[in-house]
Every structure is written in structure tokens, then in C-alpha cells.
Amino acid sequence: MADVSAAPRPIHIAPSVLPADFSRLGDECRALEDAGVDRIQWDVMDGQFVPNLTFGPDVIAACRPHVSIPFEAHLMVETPEVLLDRYVDAGCELLIVHAETTKHLHRCLGQVNDAGARAAVALNPSTPVEEVEHVLDLVEMVLVMTVNPGFGGQAYIPTMEPKVAQLRSLIVERGLDVDIEVDGGIGPSTIAGAAAAGANVLVAGSALYKDPEGLAHAVADLRSRAEEAAGLAPSTQAVG
Ligand code: DX5
Image (tube, rainbow, N blue to C red; front, side, top):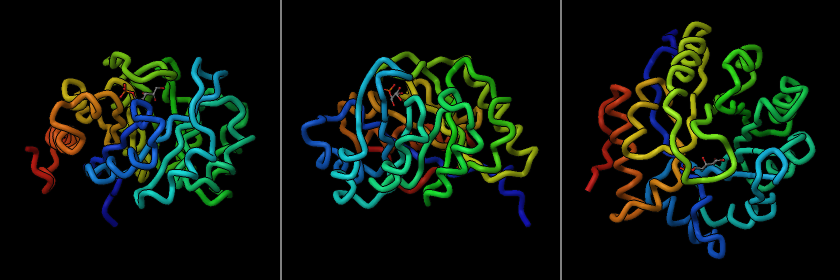
């Protein structure tokens, strides 16, 4: 059987809705789907793990019927075990648990899988890859934060690229089918470095909403930059 871990992985563009107009989130999700994104990331913040407060499960549930693309919940919350079932019920197919937020990470990721969702684990900039070495078999993705979590619009931390490369080597060495996501400061001038290091799921918020040519152009531009950096053939979506 071909070694899936070593093959270049498809590039996914995952917008953060953090910069969106919160008074029109259903419409904003539809606009993102129309712009060609692959999934939508909800930055869930509890004001404890990070100094910001955002979406509860009911807000996400209200947006679920408006689009058909997958939702992922980035749980920047203490004690994720307490609420994770609610985010699954709200329509999130993938839950991203921060390694720093639970004493029992292995058990918590198993709880995500038992709740019928797919699991992923996130690492803050200072958290080493070794923290997830023994749970890689429980996840379909590892998120390497390229900012300190809590807010959009922060500067990309380029020193995370060797960490992405180290994680990619570990995944390939183990022959695992695991994506690497990066989140924070991803835009036209930073996405190539992250993709070249081994990230294939790229979260962008500000860069999408800042593009003067609109969301569709921003999505296609980021995708083509990432595919080129990853050595992938350009996808069919032309960049206007
Ligand atoms: C940080 C958030 C941000 C957001 C994207 O907690 O997770 O990284 O999703 O922010 P931008 O793309 O604006 O840096």
C-alpha cells in the first residue's frame, strides 16, 4: 500500500471567522463557502485559556444550516471535556483540543472520537512536538499555532517552521495519515514558508478579509501560493 504519510497532502484553506461581521454570521459563512474555502474554523475562546471570549455552541449551531462545508472548532478553552459534546451537537465535524488545556489529553481525544467527531490537537508556540508524540494515533490533524492564541491580526512567528518540519518528519516516520494545520498570521507573505515546512491546512482570518479584490481572490491566491511551495500541481481555481 502506498505510504500516504510521505505523499504531498492536499492544501486546505480554512478561514477563521474571527474578523467576520458577527451580526451576520450566517451570511458570512455562505460568503466563505462561495469563495471556495474547504472548511470553516470557529475560534472558540473562554476568556480563561486566552484573554478573549467568542462563540458558544448555539452560535455555531445557528450557522450550521447555512452552508454544507465542514466546521471545525478550535477549542481555546480550559477543561475542554466539559463542553466538547455540545460542539459536536452544534455541527462541528472536527474538534481541536489544545494539549495545554487538559491533564488527560489521551482520554479527552478519545472522548472526541467517542462523541462521533474527528479529533485534532493544537500546540501553542512554546509547546514542543514531543507533547503529542503519544496521541498521534488518535488524531487526524495537529495544529501548530503560529501566533500566541487569543486574537486575530497578530504577526506570524517564523520560528514555528522548524517545529512544523519536525512534526512532519515524525508523522512520515510513523507512516501516519495526519494533516498539519497552522493558524495565525497566515497571508500572502507567510503561507509559502509554512507550506514548504510541511503544513497543508492553512487558517487565515485577516488576510482573507483584507484582500481588496475580495474573498474569492484571497482564497485562490493563498491556495496557489501554498500549492506551489508544497510542490503540488496548481489546482484548477484560477487566481484573477
Ligand atoms: C488566534 C486565532 C487567530 C485567527 C486567525 O487565537 O486562532 O490565529 O484564527 O488570525 P489571523 O489570520 O488574522 O492572524
